[in-house]
Amino acid sequence: MKDLDVEVLLKIIGKRIFVEYYYFFEKLKHDELDPEDVVETLPKYLTLKSRQTRTLKAKRIFQEGLEHKAIETIIRSNKVDDETINLAKSIHKQQ
Image 1 (tube, rainbow, N blue to C red):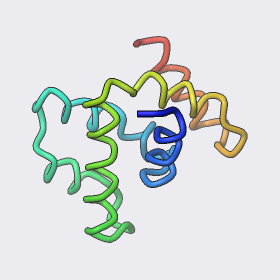
Image 2: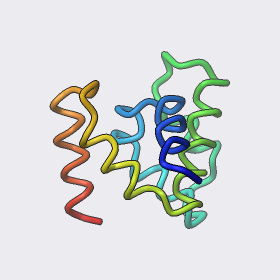
Image 3: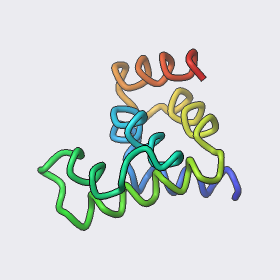
Image 4: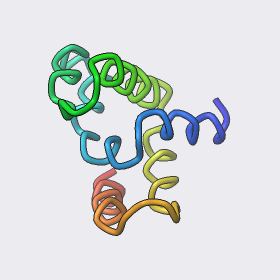
């Protein structure tokens, strides 16, 4: 998968959603959580279809081992608020 594809997946998921729910998405990689459980955890202002799509795209990032690249992309982004960047930096330190 190319770097551009990571950016496309992050646009679908939403960079803030990816960071805020990073540890839920990470558990999908190890089958510690069922995708339906993650879908139910995501904000209810999103449609069910949107939550399902975001969950599947996030799972793909983790399955392909691109979570580090995704976090680095978010940290470098000019279109993300400071709170999200700081959370991404915190995740990056723990990786």
